[in-house]
Length: 258
Image (cartoon, rainbow, N blue to C red; front, top):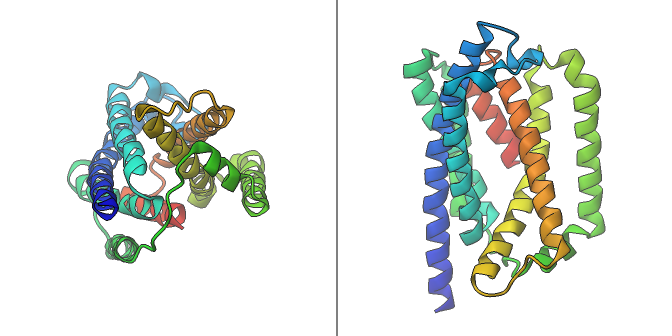
């Protein structure tokens, strides 16, 4: 019985992760078109401009991304991160195909190869995902999060991100995509943990075990919000026409998944 419930939950998470990839992949097309259009009338996002906030296409992309992220968020409630996270690679295929037809970005051989390798790698991870015990409470995730090894990783991640933001970003962000991409990917690793904790809190609350009274729930919520806002800001800078969309998404997915 327990195995059947676990299989059903994993299947729900799998389906939601697929839907999430479709929405998120399409959102990048809308957002990039909006950013390119707004950049023609003022400073582009990569140069610190925010005119894209007045561009309807950018908002369509943002709404589409929010729908995809909500689906992704719910997927983490049902399935372990080792299954949900690699499936995000499918957004690369969606974006690459749409970019070819809508943005007129030609698919280069190396771009196609990168997409294929990323998909194959993600598929292997999903098919051979190790059995993992899903934490049953927010307190349990909190106990894992305050382990010395994870605290050391978190401190190192924040230190690297601050150096990239404050020193390398202003100097090399416009010419080296790895600066902003590194910020998004490192922050993303902390986002996954926070989202998983919030998902478990919501699931337990719906089942009648209220988690809103625990301060750990709100700490994870604040971490998730901060990380997501930071990622969105630097993703807008990355979507400026520095690199073709399929290559950008492939690099982003490889760094984020690792």
